[in-house]
Image (cartoon, rainbow, N blue to C red; front, top):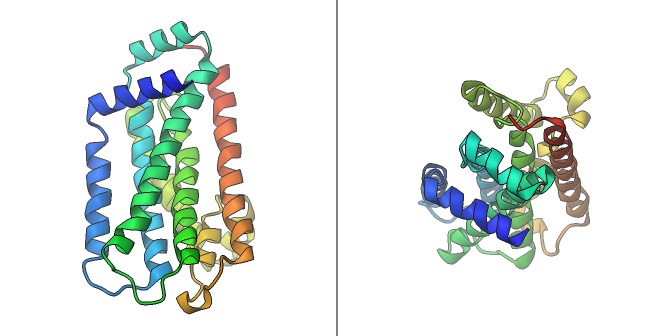
Length: 235
């Protein structure tokens, strides 16, 4: 598995498709923290939503790094389609971890926050970014070419589902609130990150439940994706 993950990384980096999403992410981080000081949790909430969209971009480009023919050859050599896709998902998750750490440490390094920053803020910041990043990977994987044949539909589908998830998370319409329990749980991240900075001295207990549910939800749908692609013939 380690060799396969390294292979996927190598293939992806050779395409240079990571440059646009990474550049946009860095640019938005710099712009967001241009003026200081900034509220801690509100700033982390904003950049975690930014990462939510950026990871959709990363996910599609990672899954499409190999052309269709090379992908089929790789799968035939592996003789295990499931392993191929699990490795791709792990690449996305590892990139999610790196970008989450970057998003959390950048403002800390440049003293961009108001006084009162503590380890609980940093832990909540990391979990906010990582949980939304992996949620984005789970949702976006269903719009890769393995399940959606049209490239245009891939990008429209990813954009629509990520934007729709955010709208449902912040909407006040009663019908949306009614169905929100079956929709992607982005709202849990927004709820926990809306706590006043001064109220956070230790990591809040409710954060375990909210971030944990987002991660479990994401892992469940990543598993569903694996089950779907396993049943499809190599094209």
